[in-house]
Image (cartoon, rainbow, N blue to C red; front, side, top):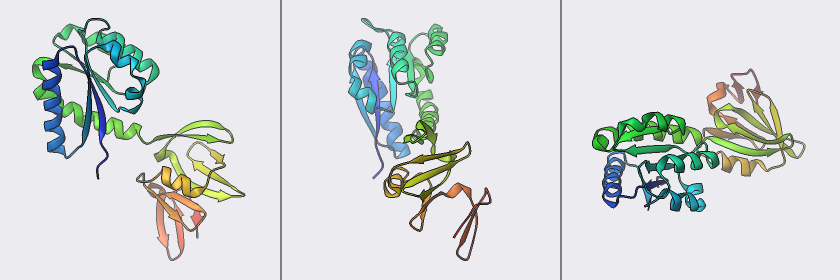
Length: 219
């Protein structure tokens, strides 16, 4: 089953929320995606719901709202969740520069949402998938965030597991089985009991020897 994407729609116009939701549903059906959408009618109510923000992967914000407008809400959200993509939606083109200032991922005009939502979602899904491959580990050396693609291989040694990356080595007191589960569907393969290898770094396999692009041989 495809994992669903949690999307927040924040707009004080119920009709505008309905239009956007219908467009996203059509996109999901066409692209065989699964979206779970939650609605808010004000920026203030959205920003107060930390639980929803922690779980969501994408936020659509109307700019022109009473109480707390979309720009203020976007700024607050980005302060807490800098990697969370925020799309600003408005009827007015003159807000485009403000969208850049609050680090919005996209700026969409309501008048041509039907024409632009597809390309917007294509790009954002790629961005979201890329960000989902950034993992945080509590290493002996400290808490470090690593992109899955930068991990060459992991080796069990003396009750620890050593991460070999392009930037250096890090050790962690965690079972290899647990690490394998965390890196599931990210292109890693288990070699014997002691190695977890990133398949993108495999150069060749000869008999019982696996050679990595770094020259490391695992047998």
